[in-house]
Image (tube, rainbow, N blue to C red; front, side):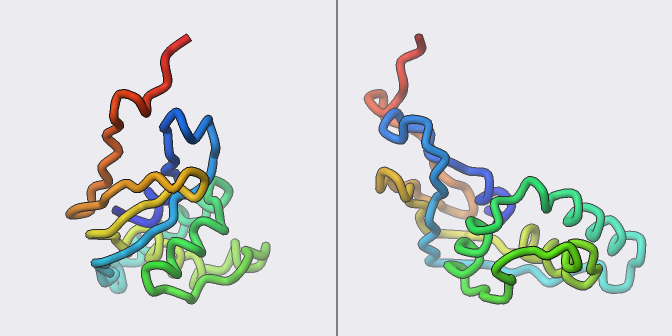
Length: 136
């Protein structure tokens, strides 16, 4: 599971009551893929544009916490306008979002404590019947 994916996931159980609380990562296995675009200027340009366009949609605090829990502590505490236009930063951000994978571990709702296992990069969000909201 990529950090980009983690950034948008939320607990959808009845107990969470619509909370937008992030999921804390407890990693037991992490994979970091090496960038494959070092010699391809067009691919590098696409990475920069992707990262730049994703910035407004990211929950930066959640990204920082997720990255730290997976052993990465290189993200700045906030994104300045200068960083948002810095090609080196944007390529590094792309790498963090797309090349860092939670292979095995646990996602825990910071609001309810509900845990969701991650196995082979796939989070199990299957709910028990009593955890589901009843449609109105």
